[in-house]
Image 1 (cartoon, rainbow, N blue to C red):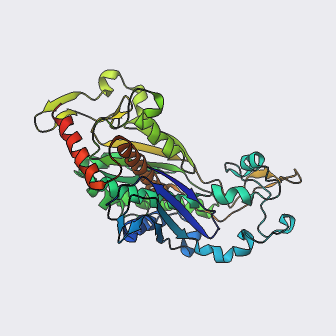
Image 2: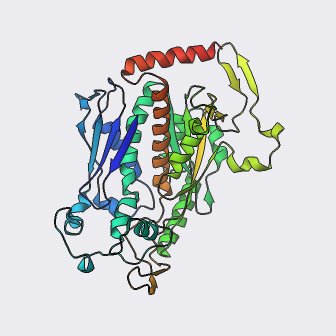
Image 3: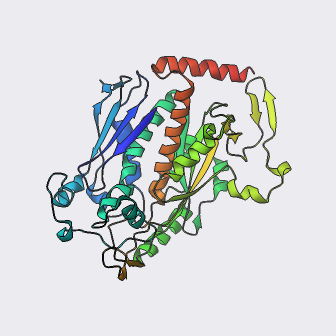
Length: 392
């Protein structure tokens, strides 16, 4: 399975093409639209979300709500394009020196300046920021929705929630209250901050509101959990086959993500080996299992069968309404950085995007290990593999 996305933030549409999804998977627009709505419905989002109502369109690879095994084309129209058509027109040639919405003052922390230097875009940084915008993650969430639907057929569930915004932390100890991932989902989806309790939700909202009032932005962390993952996905045989490394790369590839850890993560640094390693047990019903999950479901780059626990650190958004110092790329004079319409925080949406990326990587790994042509054959092979693992 592989995919590619295309589109600019204020262009006509966002597009994704997925290749390698087995034939026979039931897939509806509702399956994807509910995930797109989750990405948009998050506290701290900007004015753009009041314009867009992201709805998926199927252009290929699906017939009568069932995948065909051929490439799937997904499209989301950018409704805001009607306000930007003259600026983003792909056909009409214009004089960039007189262009409306021309951007000449790069934002610290954004792709603006380095992208312009790399691609020799001397006249308008908009040529960089339109594609480097997080609007592109719309399609990663759409692809992730397809991956989640596939994984559900195989007994794998995935959910992401917010573990920190600014200095406000979600009490992770609350996870011990829940016996299933669906219970965690039901609780966190009650809150627009995607935290796990009402007190933290209120504190996070207050922090976001204050940052917005100050013309500032906030970062934080998100946590993604995956249950039902069979042991042995990934491999130890070379660096590029380690599945935890692939997941880490996929999260770092999300806009503004700057760090990833697994299990207890960086808190493991001050522990002794005797305190940290997950002891091994065996029972006739479960086969081999671990007595704890400090390592987040991975050993040697492979899944252990325990719940995958991965966190991502998201930096504050670089667009500030009280902008920092910058330099005009044409005059080289010091000026304040440009201001583009933006969110106060991306953390609340980041949980959904990170969840999608973990789903994509897990689906890719499973489809690399088993048959990719038929969903029924895939399910049969996975069932045989799970039994083989239990009988080991």
